[in-house]
Length: 343
Image 1 (cartoon, rainbow, N blue to C red):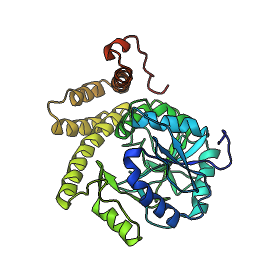
Image 2 (image 1 turned 30 degrees about the vertical axis):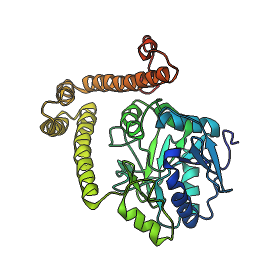
Image 3 (image 1 turned 180 degrees about the vertical axis):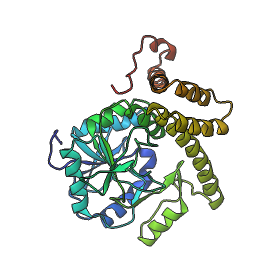
């Protein structure tokens, strides 16, 4: 299997047996739209295998969480860099292979922690600013919303593993990972235009109707007995809830970012916006009060928040392991050391 420094980095499709019904639609469209993919393709699963000689299945058996599973897949690959996909990313257009190869070279030559291939909403926010030497690319600066995400990207494995605290969901990886990344020296870049055009077909375990139409138009069969399909009303309600959640999340992130940079007035404006949405939130009041103390105050608060989040995830991991082994889950959490932000 791959060694560090391998010339062709692996492309890893992260999945699990519960999503096996998506493998045929994913890979049918993958090979249809990227027939000349030059990278060895791996599928990470629990016990099942996908019957395609072009795909190597990595079976990790049972896993406790999304992040734990991804870590085990990366350990099996042993590569310095990896292209990361999820099994519900349905490619919509022909992939420009030379373009992807160029981006892989840039990521390796510049030793990037992450080069995100997805671009534009609803998949990704725009980078913070353009790069002079690479006008099609931009920096995702600390403080940006979803600086760390599970969207398609080229990752340095070491960077990704530091963010994959065991027992995190994919959503927690994005939320907590984004905050952890602010204390890391690693570079996070992204494309301004999608390097690979795809749709994320499943939300909350349900198909989105538009993506079923993509499959139908491409002649791809879908097992509709395996999972439900959003109704129009359900999907609208889901998007409205997501939009409200991300507005508050972005207001909080921008308040923290401006306070850390010394911009008290701008930080105050975003902080008050966050507070209006959640007037009884202790977190909203803490951001306001510590932000007004200055950069050192809000940085201290942010570190404590990340420590708390990581500690909760770590405790959950130990409790799950204890239950699985028939032990008292409370007996294993004392004296546990959690990674510091940026370790």
